[in-house]
Image (cartoon, rainbow, N blue to C red; front, side, top):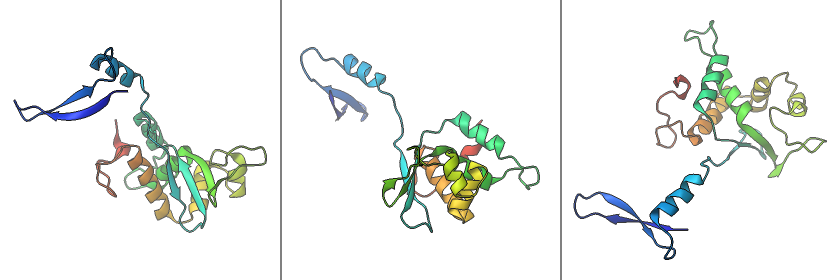
Length: 175
């Protein structure tokens, strides 16, 4: 694989990308073709569940804008002043992006060996919930914790302004 180094260009102070040759037959074009074949994905995010010692959830941080729009539409509520239920939206994000429940650093599975998450009916039954979003609310217990977790998932998915702990434009308004 080629080794990329930044080399200053004396003409206009723009840094150009050059390739350290891996052999006599490797070209920049070959290296670029190889790189463009690679699938780009975000890494999973593991978040502790506040007020649940030893419990954490592993989340998929690959969220497409079209999915975000769908979740926003599902979170509309005409009785709210802004016609949007932010808590429901946050719970939907958590429910859909949760991959695994970890308890004491081990992956929790049901009796059939399936990972527990909010789409697993055994897990929602353990929480006494009839829907995944209701299970999220029962597990977290505190609405603020739900908002924070959803914000961290969206931040890891790239829907932030790049500053740690802050969000830029509302990602739910993607059109």
